[in-house]
Image (cartoon, rainbow, N blue to C red; front, side, top):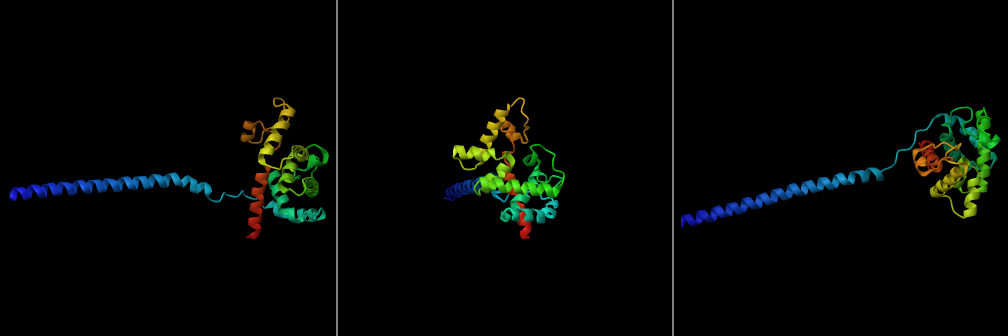
Length: 220
């Protein structure tokens, strides 16, 4: 009788040990699974967070009253921050032609050597393409970089502005100029891969990032 009880106790003990081991390994497996899921989720959390804004050159604030003056003259004072953002993208507010507006005035680089003249011409040209773009800010901004031909291109194709449209136009102009002996140099590696080296295909997104940074600094 005693031997029988001992066997029963031994068997019960074995069952308890097996159950404990199963429970232990189950907890370990669950812990590993939770850690794996957490690690896989981390990149998504980082990507979905707020993107860092570009740094601003404080020089642009010195030019803000001049930009406001000429923007008001052309009836586009609400675009002051857009124009300041374009200045950041063009030159960071540096040099004697901070709006890089020589080409819109005389068709070549370097004919403007006075910052206020640069701003006056830049604002005037932007006001004109803004009117041609029928108040479409993104289209006007890209046309400041590409030239007014981009507006005509979209009007002919009856397409709204988009980054894809900017890439297509850049590819077309780059092809027309002859890729091998083109006067246009690729500013971005992505543009070179796309054979879209006319102008800056990401000009609008860059300008809008600067505009966001400007508006945030003004709020603070």
